[in-house]
Length: 129
Image (cartoon, rainbow, N blue to C red):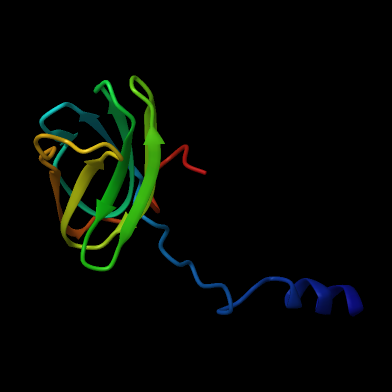
């Protein structure tokens, strides 16, 4: 009797909720040049992103991701080096800027990211952690 009760009690019931997993992280790449910052792709759906940016200038740069409710700074990034920013972004417009402690003759034009509606969850994606 005790064994039957233990088996029935351990069968689970409605107490397990299968919540959707976050969307798969999207990898974006960027480059800091003397006149501008570029990030590709520039349009993705909302959710987790990983932005890897390479500094291709002759000076150290600080990388800033800024949107309505987020400001994330990395750096300084040495010439020829990279930095990575990992964030979950909501729909909206974001800028990726490269700053310098030295005075610049001309400001480096920021990259603009357009984040659209939420991407689908990753519940049916295989080989994900």
